[in-house]
Length: 198
Length: 198
DNA sequence: CCTACCGATCGGTAGG
DNA sequence: CCTACCGATCGGTAGG
Image (cartoon, rainbow over all chains, first blue to last red; front, side):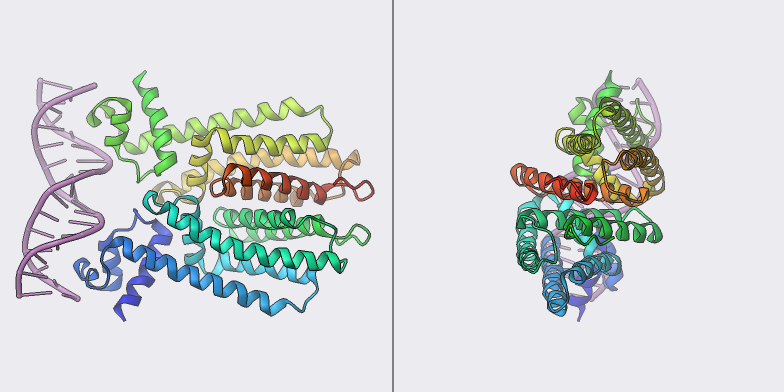
């Protein structure tokens, strides 16, 4: 369907050039139609924008809970590494989605600022709730050191955000080295005192 | 001088609206002259861009080495907290500079990508070299746990990058809570095993 | 889904 | 530092 094709190409362009940086003429060319024809499918550029954002958001929420289900039987340390790797993998392979997220988080088009913020906080709350429960369980089983739930969650969020940024300015090899370093160091912050990890 | 005024206002606009998002007509209006008059001071928009970037870069380098000098006599743990706070302070107060940095790191205008990357890596190398020496000294004096230099540097960079991003999407109070959490947890990753910090 | 067009705005120039 | 203008491109519409 043409409508889907428009959304796919719009995702690509918004992700790489931003909202204002994307011309409908270029979008039309990628889709293989004339600019005016886009208006048979969408009311205006803004409507395309929200359709793209909603699509990306749904996809992420689904992926998140799918990923969590897969590993709930593993020991915490492995869950931790898995979660880090999953996010890193996401930064790498679904460049379009991750990039769109990056852009809209940090530099939302002025007019859509409020709406975007709401969507992002919604996502984060869901994520935080999952992590906090996970940490509590790991503390009780002695798999990690005592830590306040919010503090642990804040730390994990922060290193993920850091890697999120760094992916866009290091080459692949350097980035991979940094991911391993950060995983090891973050683990040291959580690890029980007696049995030192690495 | 009008030229300085142009640069000041251009810094503000590039920082808040990006390069392509800044119209020379708006810049002129802020400066208090007509658009065409800008061309008596600069060859074109691109020349304004590089003048702004160079100014911001020089300012950062100067601030970095000034800050480091101030604290070299303190114990590592305090140096560590100071360095974190200094960066956070920078994110907060010089919103223009930090925001420009954020933008140009993550979403450089296509044409200036290469030039910007070079400048950023230059800055980072300087920063990394300072941190690595600092870590080595702290390991020798037993103030922190044994850690590979690059690994430690990568960790510090990552949490700073994470906070860098997060500043733009939390409110002040929430952000401050996160800064404290991340400082405490990062310190746990570096702290000696015997004497637990917090 | 197209041709043909709109008013507005962009970066930049001529000429003073 | 200004008035007056340029060609190109923007999002969007009329009418089929």
